[in-house]
Structures are given as structure tokens and as C-alpha cells.
Image (cartoon, rainbow, N blue to C red; front, side, top):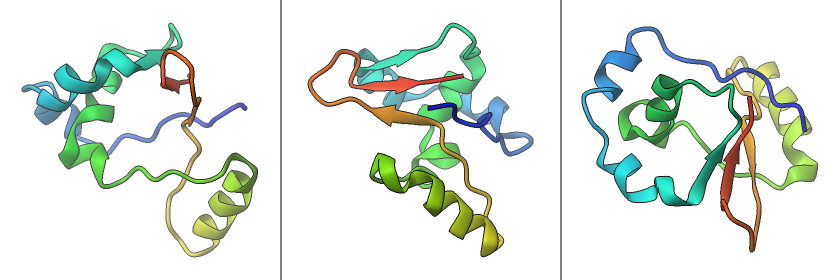
Length: 94
């Protein structure tokens, strides 16, 4: 999988960096490629900037889903994958 860059809404980083209990709680199950900057990691955990914007979809359906969303005028990118029975459980690719 070669996911696209993670889109970031302008101005959100300052709010996410103020603190994230979600990150403190769940980061133990998340891994990152070395290229993922710390401020983006924080945004991925922040419920105001990411929680309601992320969804899960079957790997074989992700490309079609992204195309359908874009055709509907909705910004959508694939950002990572969920690995069952592995550590980390969630891996965020660059």
C-alpha cells in the first residue's frame, strides 16, 4: 500500500498540541514510519481534528471508496492499515 499524504486542516495543529488524552491512552498500539512528524501524530489522535474524520474500510475496497468520495466532492485519502494479531495494531505509513 502506498497511501497518500495525510491532509491537514490549516490551523489545527496548535489545538491538538495543547494536549491529547487519546494519544496518552492509545499510542501503545500504534506504530509509525520514521517520516511521520510528531505534530501529525498528535493530530491523528485529537478527536476534534481526526476522530470524526477517520473511517475503516476493507483493504480491497479502499481505492474504489476513495474514488467514489472524490467524485462526490469529498476529500478522501488512504492513510494506513489495520493489522490483526500484530504489534503495533495500527501502523501509520508516510
